[in-house]
Structures are given as C-alpha cells and as structure tokens.
Image (cartoon, rainbow, N blue to C red):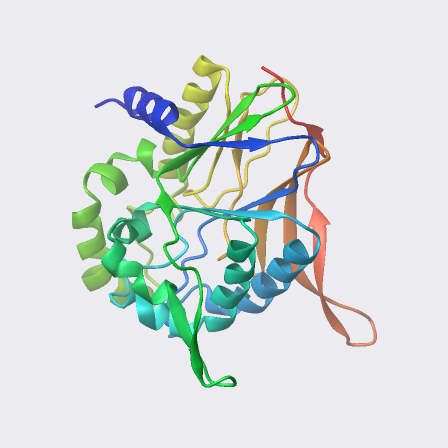
Amino acid sequence: MSVTKRLNRLYKTAPRIAIDKKSKLVFFSDCHRGEGGWADNFAKNQGLFFHALNHYYDNGFTYFELGDGEELWENKDFCEIVNTYRHIYWMMSRFYKKGRLYMLLGNHDLEKKNPKKTTCLNSYYDERERRTVPLCPNLKFHEALVLRHKETKSEFFLIHGHQADFINYNLWVISRFLVRYVWKPLEMIGVHDPTSAAKNYSKSIAVERKLIKWSQDQKRMLIAGHTHRPVFPTGNEPLYFNDGSCVHPRCITCLEIEDDEIMLVKWSYVIKKDGAVYADRQLLEEPRKIPIF
C-alpha cells in the first residue's frame, strides 16, 4: 500500500474529536520514556516535562501524545517504565479523569495495541493510602485522530508520522530487534542508529516530504511527530506541523492551540544571574490562526 493510500485510509477511519474556538490543546510526542538507565534519553528532561504537564493541566488544556511515548524497542517491560516515571503517569491520570487525554501509537510503542501490554496503566498501589487506586483504566491508543472544528467545520489530521517511513512501519519488528540488540549497546558508547529518522537528517527529510505532499494534495492540516524535528510552516507553505520531541539535548518542544491560534513552544531551564534556575516557556514562532478549509 502506498503512503498516500495508507494516510487516506487512516484519515477516513480515524475517530473524530470536536473542538471549538474555546478549545485549549497541547501536542507532545517522542518522549521515549524508558527505565531510567544510561540509555534512557527521556531521563534528563523528565523535570521539564512534569512541570509542563502541571502547567497545561492547571490551565485547562487537553493533552495529545502523538506516539512514541514509551521506548518499547529498547525496553521489554512496559510496567517497569510506568514504575520509573510514576509521577508522570499520575499527572496523565489527572488529564484522563477529566476527559482531557488522547494517546496515539508510534513505531516505538506500537506494542500498546495489545491490551495485555498496558494493564499496568489501569491502577497503581498508592503507598501513602496503602491501597490500589485507578490510574488510566481502559485507556485507548489510536493510530490516528481527526480534530473537527465545530464552527468552521475544518478538520486537522493527527498521526505519529512513521506511516510515511517504510522501514519503521512495514519492517518495524526487524527494526525493533536491531535497536534492542544492536543499536542500544552501541548508543551507550556514542554510536547512533543510521536507520532512525530522528538521528538521520536525510531520512527525516524524506519522511517529511511524503507527509507534506499528502497535506498539500488533500489541502488538510497535518500534525505529526516521529522525526524529532519541529516544523512550523509560515506564509503559503503546506500545512504540515511537527511538535518535535521531548528528548532534545537541553529542551522539550510541543505545539499548542488556544484561541484558534497554533503555536510552537519550547520548554527549557534558564539560569538567572543570581544562580536561580527555573523552567521557561518560550514561543519559537509567531502564533498563526489555524486554517479554515
């Protein structure tokens, strides 16, 4: 199946979620949460991410995670990841209980399609209360979603983006084997996986071209992740947006929609002259009105 046909199929069959001009949405992807070891690229940014989650929860945002939330190619035990980042999943459960949590599948966490893999998200043991309490019971994971604006009737397509990547979509089982048993040990001594769109610039551009072409041909706004490269079109460029990732060396990036405007945002640590350190939210591009089709 061609990339165009695959994306068209997903677009037609994806669940529709209604939004309006009052909706406040935030899009993260590619957290790659691991087990906290040396190869866990999320570990260094977990404080920033937790702070950002608190900000978005307190300000009434709906959280969308566009895939690769967990690093299940390098790590076999999903429950160990949940245990390592229990504070993160506790924050997510707060969104979930308010009906403000939507999760997509990426190539690195595609195993979550199997409900048996995610049973540890149903509940956890609260040591303070000494009892088992709900976490995110029966949480659904989607391959794609479509946001439909009530007033303008415009639709915005949400996917991870690996659907346009032959190796990471069609051959994901082989890719997982190589990452788990070849590239993970090599990464620990500084060798990067050349098959990864996130670590191979030419490969990420090739994937993006396919997603951009679909957006341009279908005249639809498309929001994705996968390449770890933030993209925010300006002027008359095709409406392909990318939220970046949570494993940048010194920051995390995301996309926000508020007041019918979309924004590309960076969260990073800033050190003041007096030595105080704080988490800073910074706009990377000027906000632009979300398009009307």
